[in-house]
Image 1 (cartoon, rainbow, N blue to C red):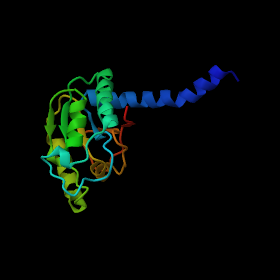
Image 2: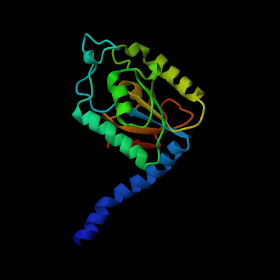
Image 3: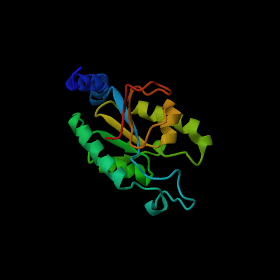
Length: 185
């Protein structure tokens, strides 16, 4: 078998994934879906003991890799025709910096996306509130949410990698299967 043929066979799964994702991207562009993503790479787990929401220097923050991931997300969104999405973000600095770093428009802090890692007992109620609030938003521009692993796992059952995005159909429902999983670019 020729090397070219072997290369084509090896790349075939990538083309089918891209084709499958095309419908998900279209649903996002049309406002029939949203993207829920985990903030870009911020080394560590949780937050330091002296964490204060209003002071970024007390939190885990994006590193150079995370800032580059955010920029590449912005480029990927532009290539997908998503120029000015509605950007909602957790109030944690690493999430806000991810959303702002995409350079896709203004970012609105959204408390329902805040991490409940330190207070897991709040998870079910906060997740239900997020679903309710998202489903009450008017339809329109593509919707992009930046949150945290614990929040995404509570909503979807999926443990996303740093910077990974999930395209989810609207109306939002708990434990729904994503239309697509998009790795950090």
